[in-house]
Amino acid sequence: MYFPLFADISQKDILIAGGGMVATRRVNTLLAFDARITVIAPEVTGELRSLEADGQITVYLRAFEEGDLDDRDLVLAATDDGKLNAEIAGLCRGRGIPVNVSSDPSLCDFQFPSVVIDEDVVIGINASGKDHGKVKETRQKLEDALSVPSIYDETKE
Image (cartoon, rainbow, N blue to C red; front, side, top):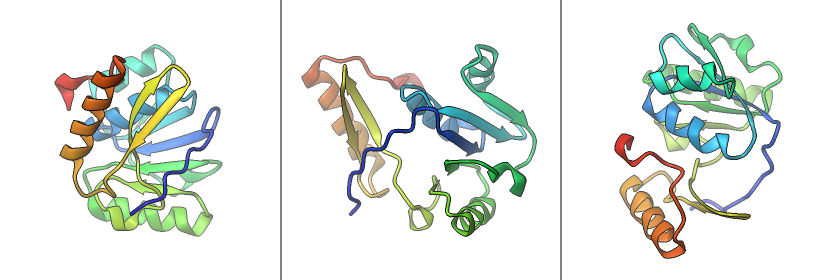
């Protein structure tokens, strides 16, 4: 079980390695918290391309390189390559950069929560990486109970 820790990530440099649906969901969550987000992947979703075109994120269409970790405050490894995700986690640990690996909770320094936002109140929901369905169900119940809109596009989950 993980301890819930809320941190100020505004203006922090966050790297997301990967450009698929998991990376897209993570970017959309992080955008609500004013972080500086860079996505590196050979291919990215249309939504990530749109966010870059709007100036909300930076995207590099190429493979991850170790130098991409320079000056990063937080890293999310969300590629579809488990070996690459593990390599990124190891490199981050060597540099003291907190890392989340979407495909392997055992490699994570922190869990990426599902989030409900009601004005200045932020609720993070997590099941230690074990039951994503229960997390989603709990988030939806909280959004309904608080009558707040979801920050997630349910058609893409």
